[in-house]
Length: 120
Image 1 (cartoon, rainbow, N blue to C red):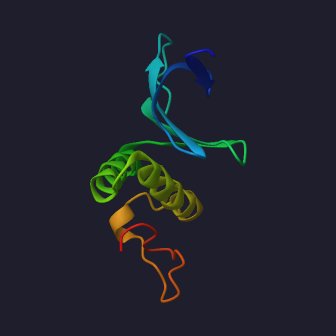
Image 2: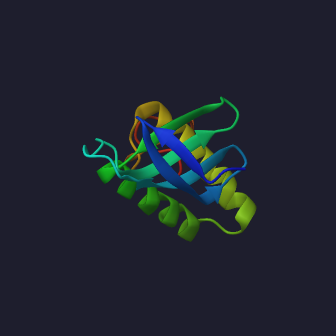
């Protein structure tokens, strides 16, 4: 497997940070030598292996994603529980584009709402 990808004509090195049951989270670092700096220069890529899709995030969204993974890890016992909770968080985060886990809520029936999928 190659450890680089191209986005908008720029080459990025790919470092896998996390792999769950459904998702991969990769850090993307640009290898840039052209005259013009691309708009996206560094961030994270979330790959949904079930849907064969990928989303790139940077800035505050990337910070919220890393914070949320750390938060979920501190709340779950065992690797399998962490992976399952992360999958649930990422399903909602990718759908709503809200990557801060503490602002996601559950409805009274326990189903994820726009505001909280994992925190209970």
